[in-house]
Image 1 (tube, rainbow, N blue to C red):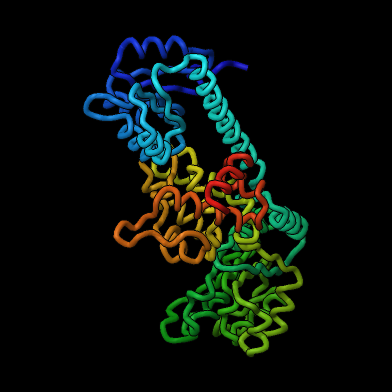
Image 2 (cartoon, one colour; image 1 turned 90 degrees about the horizontal axis):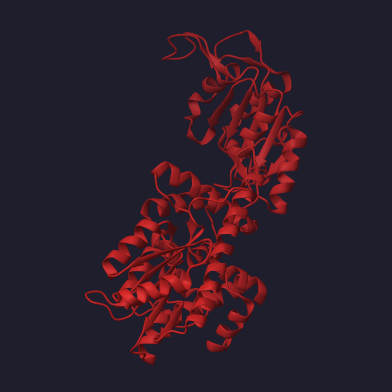
Length: 460
């Protein structure tokens, strides 16, 4: 196995003292670690944006820009970067402020080289673990993709198995599921895996067709059959001959057209509007709906005989809320797609952004997640998507107010303190995990001991 030219982990040291830079660089040097140095904070911040180091070690007191300002700007760029502050003027207040602003540690000068090596070593190991996790997620994503559909939850594996079994044999089939859950992807998978895959895949959205033109669209018409019929026209059934016709939102099809569709499914022949001659067609029909067709039958809005004809084979697409274990894979899938589309180097989400997405109920299902990630990739300035890049409605005051915990943020600022936000995230993670502390710690991407410490700190 060849070693990569660029080390896997990089450390940036910022200090206006040339002697300290040289001492720290030589003391911390080790195999597989790239050490970058900057003698002024402006150059250091440029290196953060250019090289994207995993660890930043910075002095607190420097000309023009302080270490705390460097910390703030690094956190704005990418909160996943570990920042350690060093100072010869230790004060409890500034240490607390630094930790609140996201610093990983706050060290007093002169720094013990042994202690610093140990601390940096742990951060390097954490960075390598994160990189390995990302590689494993990439491998999992490639193995969890089935005909363009991403998922590795039990519900999705069950659906994939069902698609494989029925694809070679179905003539008519019904797909049910909420809007945005991916019914169109299931229809495409069925077509590609069926004997009709060499034929056309034709789509009709039944909710987008004017009622008076339904029969002409599906079955075609002959010249002069109605006003405006200036020439013979083949319908979608003839156009899809030898292939698949996908009828999306079948529940919106008029009753009169439903009766004629049933005859086509039974006889495999169509009759153009105004024609006396029937034409044989060989078409597989996939229908999809987000409605309760049984309720529509009882309300006389859908034909019972057509329902039973279609639902001989039924595939239900699960809601995203029922398969949240697929969220990380779907997030990576959409990030890769939009990063490529926008020409950006975006590698993933920060921990707090992941937590926020995991706690959302996703009423719009996978389509909503796709829109959220597309928006975030467009807004992101760094290589990681953070909470601020996500659409505002995901962290609106109304959503926060529904959760137990501290009072909502003060209206004049629009945000709560760091302590309040940390407490709120912990409460929401515990709720999402059903009170299971190990699961909550995994959601928060922290250790179980760290979670227990924070539970005690916030009196939870």
